[in-house]
Length: 355
Image 1 (cartoon, rainbow, N blue to C red):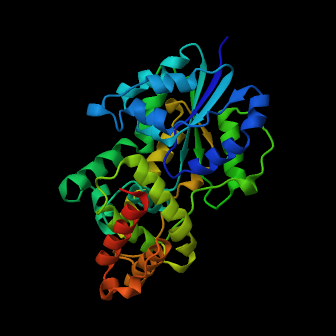
Image 2 (image 1 turned 90 degrees about the vertical axis):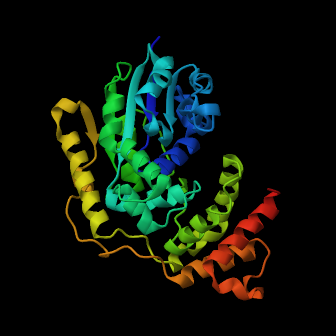
Image 3 (image 1 turned 180 degrees about the vertical axis):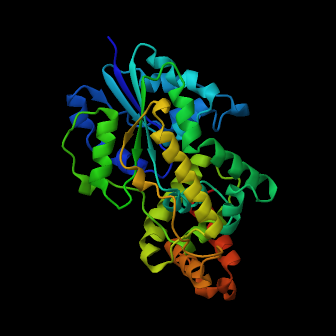
């Protein structure tokens, strides 16, 4: 008998962590309604994309094992939005006889791009914020900037939506706009409507989005990354999660926000306009859950030119990280140098984790 399958494919920084946290907490209630929400999917999706695989060759077997369940299935994993046409056959092969709904969230790019840079830094990114913005525009220098530009181009919402909606195994594609205001209840309502999940009762107060960090802490992290290129992805991710959650996130209210400059703001508004045009096109076959007004196409930039964070923010974040690692930054006269602090934080992480 045909199953109902929901694939929530992202996009990155469109409320996916909140949705996943809510799904985890309601797993038993969903199971009583005949739905399975797997306990993990990131490694299976990474394998299907060839990430971390010898020669980058995809391995679809972990994904097939993950999705071989009785009854209806919902998977939420934003890395699915990275899938190229060559990957889609393997990701959709287990559902040949099923009713497949693909759900994608889209968010105002003015709000999303700073979060995307933070996520990139959390994955060992090393470009600073002004250079990252230049890379997005295709104006960066070097291979790293070129890779950032190429990756950003591949995951633009219109391209992702076209890829998934064109596949014959997909029955429908629903798009959820992230509310302009921080409204988790409304975001969840839209996701449930888009996915067709049963309206199980949820405690939205207990759902956890990603913890936010400020500009200075993000700058510290990207400096630390330059000293850890040899650390395995899994080990790095676990260590940085602890640093992020326990040290950097609690400092967020004391630090400045990451904001777009004029060129980036104008580019973000143009990107929003393209998404709005796709969503408003009846021929695209997309089902909208939300409001096109959540994707503004005009507005003044916060700053004319993007600059670095205040030096004191970076130093304070570094001192806090060293204290967490059991070291005293002020015992070293070089502690007023952000580069030296970042190197010492990286060395402390190596000692703590035995790298």
